[in-house]
Image (cartoon, rainbow, N blue to C red; front, side, top):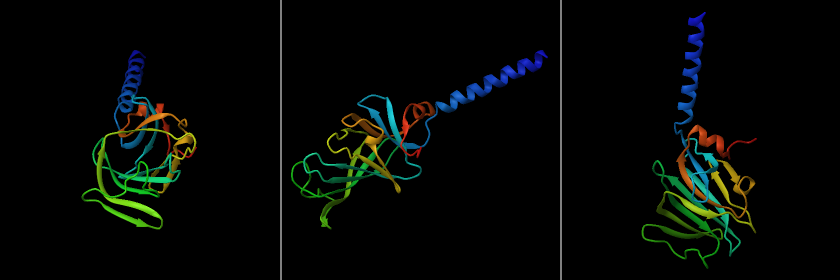
Length: 175
């Protein structure tokens, strides 16, 4: 009887240790939104093998959509590859930089071939026109459905541990 009891304790300890260790190991990358400039995970969107994602928002002055396409290029880095927008005045480029192409198609300006590398981007989510959206593959999520309009967030590409995933909201979860 003592051997059985001892075996059960060892088994419980082994399962508990395995669970805790497994929850501490970072997994596949996600687009992660942190509270301001902290490590507090607010929400995340798993990349699920995709290497590109888009951030679309309404420009605060022009009140038209701006679409930024990013590519994951390293463990914690992503690069702006394309920018699409409708107005070249305040706050928007009117031409491409060296190595980029600038075009105007269907009423939209487009800069392609960009290589602007980031480890993080801080942003304030819109209040008047809360339309910050993240798209990965064919799924698009309105950030203000989960994150407070007007809040300051930092967007990064990170591998989250199981504990971090439990604290944040999975934007890919349809429930």
